[in-house]
Image (cartoon, rainbow, N blue to C red):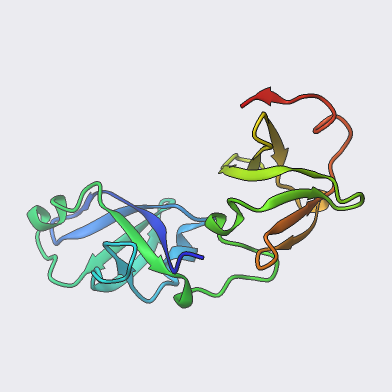
Length: 173
């Protein structure tokens, strides 16, 4: 399991005092705002110096230590920021997307293995899991009533598919 996960990307500056706008790669900007610190690397070796963060128009406004001018802030445009999973408490039944990648997707009633989750595709209504068995790919809607159990430690997710999702050959991988 990765300790440091992608939180989002700095997309632009805000104002003239070095504030930054970050596109949050999470359920909501509020979720990322709960992090105590953000990092410029995925090992936690380069803290960003988070002074404050607040949601604003679907994104996150950040103030970082030592970034006080628009020129300093502009140099950070395009940078990916990471959060430490230890700083975040997930609600019951919620998981980091990175932890879902690689899980064995099995039928929650029969135990049949369909493949492994290779990607989580964000969609407006619900996320979609791309599942591959090495020859075929399937798209599975990640809706609560179609997921029996998610066992990150056990490396599997038990699905309750409706007829037709896994019946055909899927798309060629």
